[in-house]
Amino acid sequence: MARFVTIGYGDQDGYDSTDAAVRDQAHAHDARLLADGAITGVAGRPVQVRNHDGAGVTVESGSYMSSALPVAGFGIIEAATLEEAVELVSKTPCAVAQGVVEVWPLREL
Image (cartoon, one colour):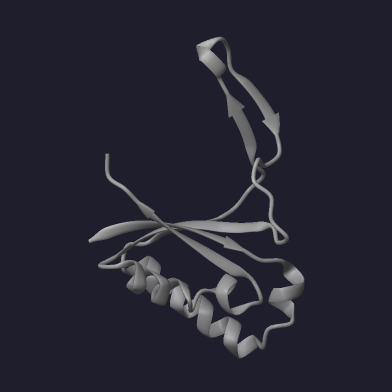
């Protein structure tokens, strides 16, 4: 099985404007993903870490990437193909509640 990193973006307004039954189904889907071994979490406040040329570590508050929607959470899922991974995340809260989910194939080193 291949692994995929997922990044969910969404905001409270989009979540609140989605029918409660749809949200409930999405949360139930997340619970099934967790039961099947997915690792997920809600995003906290990020920091940026740099150690250019190994000369010293600097840490700054805030995210480096930018998006019209805030990052809501992350996950690591397993799927046989990218298409299967897309199918799995298409039913998650960020995907159904007016947000978006990125799926990144995680290449083994």
